[in-house]
Image 1 (cartoon, rainbow, N blue to C red):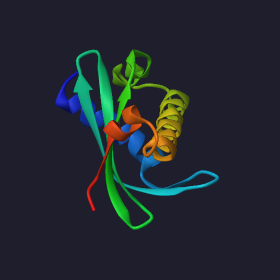
Image 2: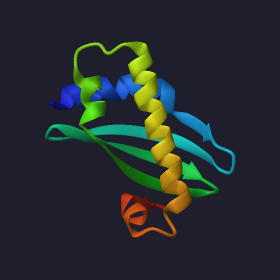
Image 3: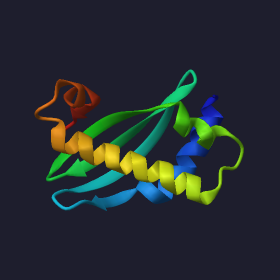
Length: 110
């Protein structure tokens, strides 16, 4: 996976993850997205605003999501992976203060 591939995947995910995301108990405003290759898998790094605080969160993705790097994935595949990233992001938000693994994935910037 090259930097160009990471940029292409970022552009695929951008319309699904950028901006305000809501669940039943939190609102997160994604400001920036970066896709970082890790050999056969990748991380999605999100910068976001939440309740007046700025955060950087690194969400590891497994090999099954690497399908995004294979040519032009079908739109439903992109939506599905983006939805899983959203779920993972909200899981991180709700557990970051209680679970060591979740806390290590995020960093408060302000």
